[in-house]
Image (cartoon, rainbow, N blue to C red; front, side, top):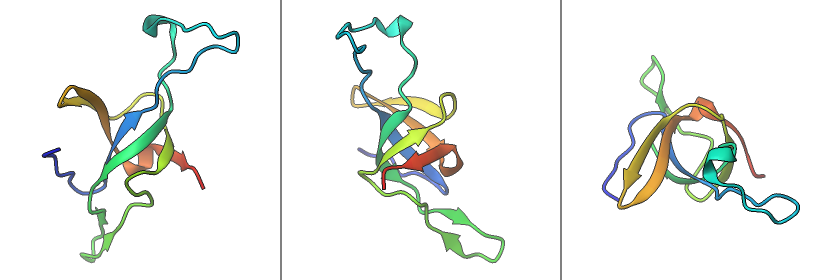
Length: 94
């Protein structure tokens, strides 16, 4: 992929938008942004004042719930990703 995340950053790829319960696929402009995402890369972690590095609570492959708005959208090799701080991850699948 060619990207190395720094510090307390995580790169995710949003899950595909789901169809309505009636099976209707809404156009992208009418949909809310999916809050489910898959972790594809993780930085080394947050550095404390003591110099100790605290690793993120997520790992590559985890499915997470992210804040609706936040992070930086990027495109790599034609795929869309979102880079955000671990504090913008609200939960992960247990």
